[in-house]
Image (cartoon, rainbow, N blue to C red; front, side, top):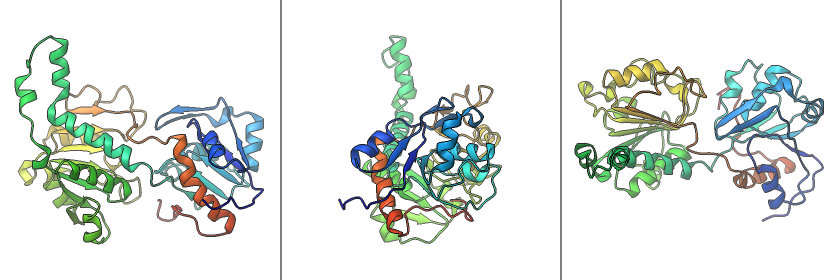
Length: 353
């Protein structure tokens, strides 16, 4: 690894994710770094609990003087909504999440006068693991076997546990073919699934085939109709918000030539409204929904999704940022920043991602 370039610019870590500062110090002992801890910021997994109005005066001063910040987009957005000058010295913010949508859904005056970089390249494998685990659990109906065990009933749920299909006979459509989508497809290919990738831009089919995508299409209807399982890894952007709402999933229904597939969402919850999702289940556009992200998070206890036997609720944990992952992404950009070179994964304030 190339030596750390000299810089007196301090890196400020203000995050609900444990271990980031420690991992950065272990990776680069000479990195000028300060970790800010404040009772106003907490959280777990993909959920942030933050009240900027309760920040201490000391924390406010440190943040106001910070030039490089490592934090969650939701934290930064809430901070700036509370006080537009809270980060007045900032030149670069490294997000700890792949998704930066809180910055665009908050009431902020965009574009902001500093660079924001996404945390990319780490979430593909864990999210792929989650998706394939959920698909297998659904297809083999592990929940029914667990119920049989609780009842001490040997194969009591015969129809539920014996009617499974081999994954090698099924088609998986991945909505979104970035690094996460490609990892999901590659994992599915390891089980022999046929994979279809959907995206809005032209891509090299040969390159995608090498990463597990058998077919690539810009036709959403086709991707929905051909699938036994649909996995959405779509980010939250002006183009994707509500993309599957209303009648968006109708092409997947058997009446429209589809297979009434299982829908998994590990991208962003606002790709479909909760009302539209429930309608899609009730009308048979899809047969089940396995959800790690939701239109509103945390999912309210009043939500109609909780009690449905055709819905699995997971609290945004399919791909969590771990402190040990941060140095690999951050340090490469830090070297670029200090050298005055273009950084990777820079967010376009106009495009929204």
